[in-house]
Image (cartoon, rainbow, N blue to C red; front, side, top):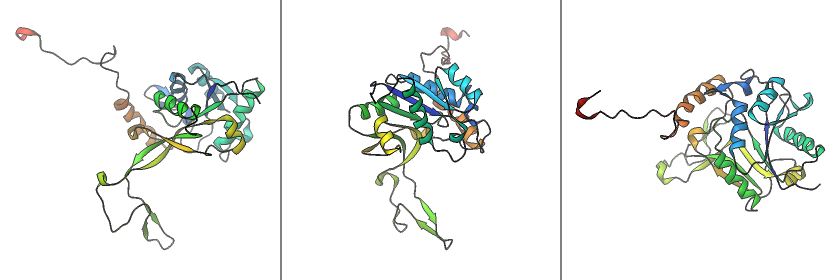
Length: 250
């Protein structure tokens, strides 16, 4: 197999969803989730091609309209038990059949609506330069975690329950967001899993580190979009502050 040295973003987006029917086409701030993923990938300077793997005609049409290529996923790989890895491998096989063998894969999750193209570029650079085999999105966390045991009692997981250090005195832990994972295509084919070799984190803004699984998540994402996606001050859509005219004129 001969690599083209290119970078492909793969967005698995099946039509079925139990939590939110038609989830990948649901809209956050005027754009569908699948469109958001495609547009984030297309805005990254290191990504050469964006592929959406789907079994749904409406998703396929939306993906094409957003500028992606579509790989039609067979029913056997589109059920509730199908893994993301199986969809990525199928997409890579489809590219190979078309004479294209990308070097680096950027796996994007459409249900993460706030993917920063700059984060994608930085992660791709780490893999391309050989600093890491895998780079995935993670958000810092200082949460005290607990687990309920078989006896029904709560047990501390990541801390000593008798010691309550201040937030600023604790090293952060990192929560995988699922937004994106970057790896080399050849190694992924060999291991058949996204986590292999040297794994590094792409630390992302925790404010936008949301994964949409239910209607409450969708409502939260819509509220966050109003805060996170304000136009820049010099953008035509930005609202200029009111400055009183001289001499009390209106």
